[in-house]
Image 1: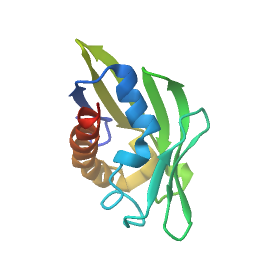
Image 2: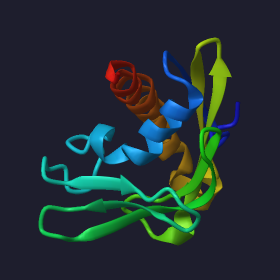
Image 3: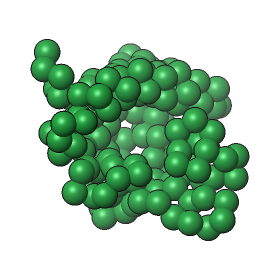
Image 4: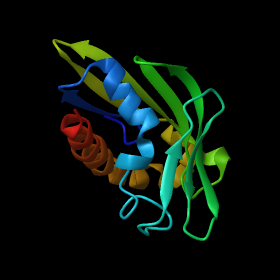
Length: 151
């Protein structure tokens, strides 16, 4: 596998695709781990995903400063969400993140694919390596626990 191939992480949930999508997009500010995965890294930080074409994925620091992390490119409620991704960097270095929600028995499988690493130039392999474990924790543990705890 090339060092800049897309990262693919999947998690199986006891929630329908519609519920999993709603939690990912509509409750992003409730499950995203700001203490470890934000520029501000403070409890009062809020990260939001505005789930509409052209909507922003953004961080709002306690002092009111806003950091754009990306822009929603495609949305199919209950099925798919795609956005650019460049937290802490300029938009010309953006990669893309595609999240698919598919039925699996009474639950669902959520698959996150993060690609477009070449936009980062020579630091791409380094950042990609860090994101592998990052997405496994954020999607596979934090998000999954949030969804599976919800009624």
